Length: 134
Image 1 (cartoon, rainbow, N blue to C red):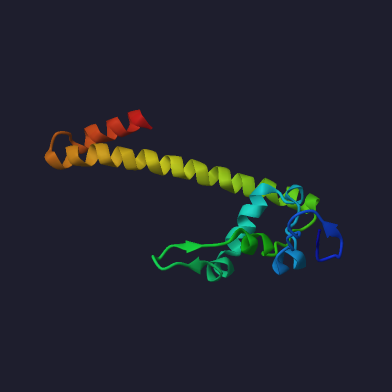
Image 2: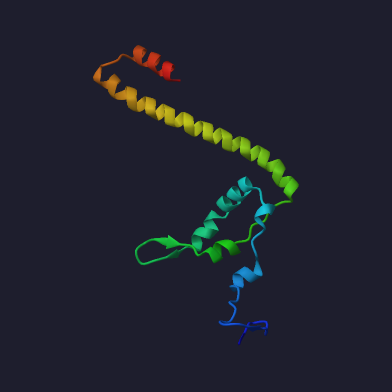
């Protein structure tokens, strides 16, 4: 029988030790973090995390899970998180609405601009078509 780090006997192969980074700072429980706040915490840590990306010979970067899981995330108490999420959710909803409007406007531009430039439709007619779509 093999012995683990703690001296206990194990069957078969020795028990794997946790990586040092994982032992020093375990990630907070998923239940202790509001999902919307986790997104912004990771965005806030983006610069530091980019520095830790490992590059390979063909230009592709990778980040081992151990590095990501060991990255410290500081969160306020759950009640404060819930209060902040109300505001963040409203901002996220506004962002989603703006993206949808941007897609609609881009589609409208792509449909009308060639017709306007070719003289197929006039500006007044294009305005009517735009209002009908909106």
